[in-house]
Length: 87
Image 1 (spheres, rainbow, N blue to C red):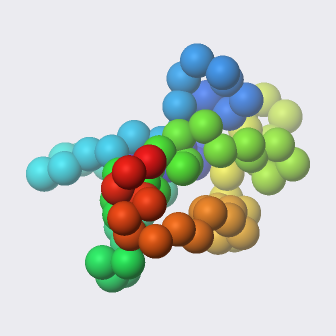
Image 2: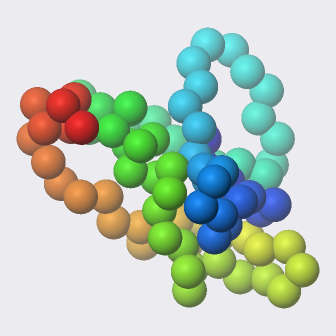
């Protein structure tokens, strides 16, 4: 899951992404992400997003929000599956 609004954007201590598995309830304040195929390891995806620098991507004065459009512009470094698992 990736924070949409109310996230810890800009925090050095708290991540903006978390890995969950199994059944869970997700409200409308998070983006739920899942790799489309086996070429992207879900742990690598989560790790890459945890402390992603979203400066300039979030909007809002009192409650920052990472919109779906902004999220889709995020770039995850492309690595082989073995490299992803090693990281």
